[in-house]
Amino acid sequence: MKISRFLTDEAILAEIGGRIARRRIDLQMTQEDVAGQAGVAKRTVERIEAGASAQMPSIIRIFRVLDLLQNLDQMIPEAGPGPMELLQRKSKTRQRASRSRKPDAAGKPWTWDAET
Picture 1 (spheres, rainbow, N blue to C red):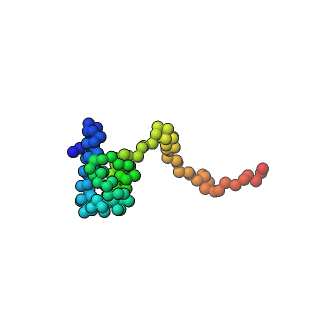
Picture 2 (cartoon, rainbow, N blue to C red):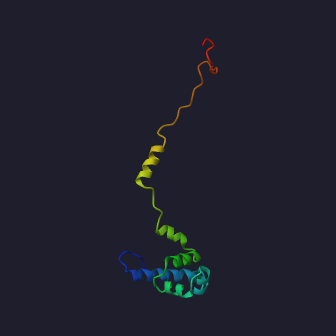
């Protein structure tokens, strides 16, 4: 099932729980294995897989054990730069390339005038 805004909270929790259970089984892990590595109770893993609500730290620990943390980064992307930061970046960009400096016409280094 595709998760969309039209689903109820309970349906979304059930779908997430089912996906977690499938991932765990794909990795050949038991609920007890996941619970032990995540540092949560086996009952917590059971409840999450059944679609019950859980505390965010428990979910993050389980995601870490199941190697799903990178999916959180895709799900909730980092905020981009704000308007003021974009303006500041824009003002710092160079507008032109600098010219190469030509040596003096005589090719001699400049020295102080001896008459002064």
